[in-house]
Structures are given as C-alpha cells and as structure tokens.
Length: 602
Image 1 (cartoon, helix red, strand yellow):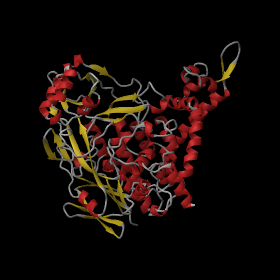
Image 2: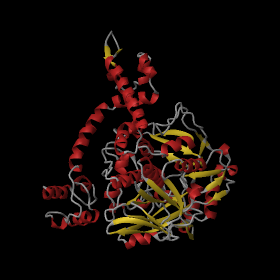
Image 3: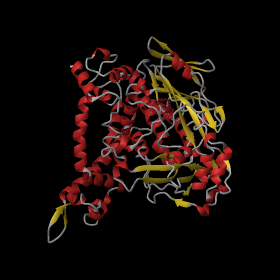
Image 4: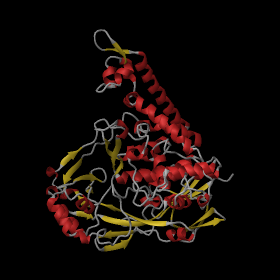
C-alpha cells in the first residue's frame, strides 16, 4: 500500500507542525531543511505565546500539535498577561530556553513515524496539468510527492540590513533561499516584499542589574498543553526592565538617516504593531521613555535579548544609544540588531485550507503568507499539514472558520484582506473572543481534531473527562444555594455572577467543589460569569453561519453581475472568495455588492 507522501520545504515552526500532523494522520512527510541543526529554531524573541498568540498555541495543542508541549518542557518563566482586563483576553506567555526548545523539537520529530528529515533546499517543483507531482532540490534531487507545503519563513531572497551594510541571509549567520521565488513567479504567483526586525543581543556581565526592575513569572503557572503532567512546576527565571530616555532618543533621532529603513534602503513594508526603536521615537515623539525587557535567551544565559529595541541602525549607533541607559552604560554587544526583508506570496491566492487556488496539492504556511511570529506560523503549518493528508485521502477540507477560533480568524484574514504588512494575531481581530478563551480551546476543537484524524483517542478522552468535570461543577452550583441576608438564599451560580464574588469564596461554603482542579473551576466560573454575553455571541455566530454557508462557484465572472462597483469587481475577480461570508470581508466590497452577488447566486 502506498503511503501518502508530502514534501515540506522548511523546518521552522510551520514546517514542524505540518510534518507532525502528516505523521499523526498516517502520511509520510519529507521535511527538507537547509540546516538540520536549525530545526525549530526560535530565531527572534525567546518567548512563545502572549496576547492572542497564547490562544493560538492553546488551539494548536487542542488539535494535537507540538508547540505547547515543547514550550512547557523548554519554558524558563511562565506568565499570564493582561490580567487587569477581562478573562477572554488573558494571554498565556512563556520565556523559553531557545537551545532546549530546538533540541526538544528535533528529538520529538525524530521519534515520529514516517518523518524523514533531509538536508537540502527546495528550489522548484513540477506539475502534471494543475497538480503538484515533484519537488526539486538545488542539488538536482527530485522528490515525488502527492503534495508540497512551502514553509520558507524569511529565507526567500532574504536580505539583512544593519545601517548601510547589506548582505544576503535568511537569518543572521544563515544563507538565504534563492530560486523558489522565481519558480513561483514563473507559475503565475503574485509575490510581495515585507520586512521585520530584531533587537541586539548583549552580554549579561555588561549590565548593571542593580539599575533594573525585576519582572518575574507567575507563582502558580499554567501550562500550555493539556498533555503536560500536573502539578506543573517549571523554572521561574527572572527577567528585567529598563527604560530609554531623552538622551537615547536624541541620539537615535540625530542618526535617523543612517537607519536602513529611514534611508529608503529597504523596499519591504514592516509591522506597525511591533515598531523599531526608530519608529517609536518618530511616531511617539511626545513620549520621554520606552520600556525595554532584558530577557535571557536560555537558562542562565550570558546572552540577553533587548526586547523593545528592534533596530536597523549601524552597530556603533546601537551601542551609543544603549549606553545612554543607566543600567547599560558598560554594555557590550554580542550581536547587533538588524532588519531583514524577504519575499512572500500574496495569501489571497489560497483557499481556507491554505492550498493554492491555481495549483492543486501546493500549500503555503507561515511567513511566506505574510505573517509574523512563531505562533501564527505554527498554526498555519498545522492546518496545511492536516489538509494535505485530508486531500490525498479524500477526507475533504478541514477548515476552521471565524466561528471556531483564532486559527480560523487568522486564516480568513489572510485570504480575504489586503496584507500590506506582516500580519499579527490580536484578540480584537476575533468577533467572538468571549467564546474563544485560551482556557477552553480543548473543549472547542479537540473533538474536531479527532474526527479528521489529527488527535488521538487518548487526548480526546482526556478532554471529555475535563468537560464532564466542568459540567459537574456547574451542576453543584446550580443545585445549591448560598445564604445572603435575613435568612434569604440565592442559587450558587447566580450568586457567582455578582461582581467581586469568586468560585474560591463559594468553595468555603460548598466544600464538594474543592476536589476539582483549579483550571476546571476557572473555566466553569468564567462560563457562568460570561453566560449572558456568551448567549448573545452564539446568536451572532448562527447569523454569520448563514452567509458563510453560501458557496460561490470557483471562477465565477463578477463582471457579469449587474450593480457591482468597479472596485468590488476587481477585488472579487482577483481574490475569488469561496463563500459569501468571505466576499463580505474583502476590502472594497460593500453590503450592496454582497446583496447583488446573493441575488445572482439565487
């Protein structure tokens, strides 16, 4: 019996999740990487998760992915961000030991069935009519495959900038991937150019730690993976905070023309949400200081990542600017910060399964789709891997929608919106974020994963056990009352809805609650406190499903539809949305345009 074979080009976070999903679903993955030692490398910040990104990691885990599990093993500090706001937008984040993370990723992949790691570089591919047949490596090796997933990160024609100095690289110290962009162009794909940046790395011993503020992790941390053993007691290594000042800002501003970005040297577009230090002093010129985090890159690391000081200034200017900060007066660079620009494939050319609309069996995942971040990349790799095997085995597309979770929002945004800067996931991007909490990702998605074959029965049984415990907690609260005043009583779940009342407080009155796990109690409590909002969101979800279920035939000619605006015709013919819902989210398509399309379809 022939095993379905998928070539995965690139072994970063997207490539790893793709190969892992393929293996779990009974396929064979050939994971092609330019450097076997760089598999799973955290090339920028030494952290996983954060605001919205933590939700993605939880959803990846709920679907059987590996990122959460490895983060729990490699984490050196865990913290829940955004606790001052509503629970739905709390963001789990972990500082990681980057060296250990990569080592664990390599080990885990090596233990999986039917994953072959091959050192090489995919530069081309061949098709039979409109379907992928082979992947072609630089050395001439031809790999026959049923599908090809491209997860090339920032390597496609990568170019690093440090001041006026420019040199080809995929990451600092690693060669770029040249040739694959040209092949994609030859097949008619639209290619764009983006940029991102990274801060300098400094030597631990050159920092005056007495001049810094301490930033510790949570005393009772929460793991990312439902498969991680409890109790969870990871390391809690300290990070530190320092602040820029007017001297630092003035020095940077006086040298702004030496910045690769501000000199016009870089053609790619950078992210607004994660601006360089040059961006910050220009865009926020009224602010006298900016917060910087000093983060160890591995356990007890001598190398410190200066989070918040992304820059493309010359190395000498970087040193001067950092030394204007009291704690960094004697700072020594291990590696300067830099900007990198690279090619990406316009993601509106993909379906919701991340398959090319033009070439069957060709999938794209990660930064090649215009995203930024390990978590966004891993989520796409997971979906591409699942769909590659589902396509080969004729299981149908596995599509997560905006009504399913953050992964669905991420992909829908990519394929329907204009990506003019590296895309980052935000909680504000999700219309139903009260329903898509990080604590209920398994309850939302694990059953779906079991049905498509990417989740084990054991993981699903664990989820069902947790669901039953949460239901038991709700039953206890529903059937018992709490004394209030003058002999009056109130049902416990109604009492819990009051501001300032916690389930821990009720546990003092109803001790039968105290046998349950803290996280199960948290989820039950949140469901009860949010119940009114969740009911309204459910109604809105059902309303949205109405337009999402209306399919649009591929290749429909919008020029034949009366009453469409010229901009709508142009955008619709270019993007080719799969559903009426997708069409409604395309920039330039108005509600009246959607009405005209719906009339035409009927």
